[in-house]
Image 1 (cartoon, rainbow, N blue to C red):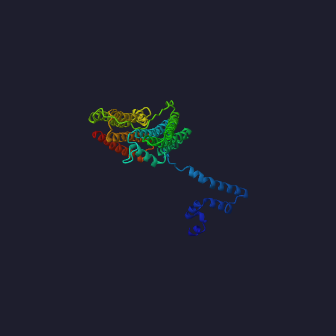
Image 2: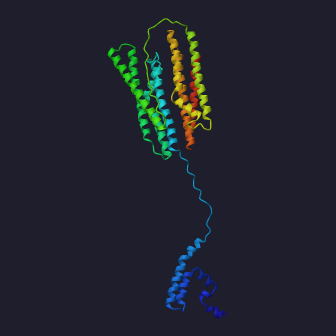
Image 3: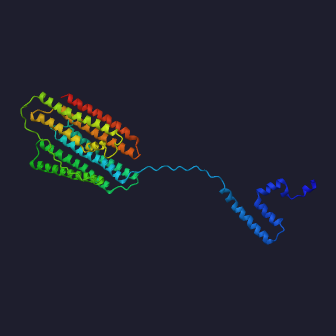
Length: 398
């Protein structure tokens, strides 16, 4: 038996069988040509069969491997707002910036209408406003609104309407008109102090009228751009009229200062309470679930705020109070001037908070909240509380 095993071919041993299986294509090719007694035609056919089998067997093997049923979860794309929705949101942003430009002009006009407009020590409200405007140098209000508007379209993969660039140009021109008006009204105020020739007075007043007309024209263009973007009717052209302060002849008082102060306190208190109530209502409306909708109570009130409606009533209260002193031939106390500044700033704080709150609501609607949004709103609220307290303190001095 041992002799028989020694003469067995290697592929008939147990280890040979294993080796033949491992290298079966090569084994079969060797076996066909070395051991088979068939003819050459058969050997060629068998060789082709082995080669073909060697090629397709890995394909068959891989095809029979189990396939994982685990589905690949694709990230759900963020919904992007429609172009109409974007236009409405952007129109609101641009309207807020244009309202800020209007408010800038209104503040300057209010300061220039006061009897202390040219006072330098201490700086009058007008001179303070003038110095701040000169220091600002560029129209950051318009630039920031434009940048924010373009970002909204870009993030939503929508083309930026050409009217956005037109608005930027018109609102920047409006801002520059405020600067031109500032320079011309300063000349007129100096003329009113006396010492200027009649030709200088005429020239300066013509310059003042021209700058005011340019402001009015560019402001109406800017408002028209916004209405075109939002698809609303173009607003009626705004007419801006203004007469700078001019000294009046001195007369004897016709009423006591205490009596006029009492009337003025009532007027100013009513107005500042109205501003405080406005802020309370805005905060309540902003907390509603539909606050970001263009039809919401918050958005409707927001539109009034950015258009400066309440600021107009604040200035009207100041004018009414100042006229009471003037009609009684009394000098208005400094507390009234301070109240006008602080009350105006309080309304500015309300407008700023409202604009930033709307920005936050828009960012949340578009799933793009910014970390700085809430910080900015908290800062706006602190500024509002501080200036409201100052305005109330001014009243207490009367």
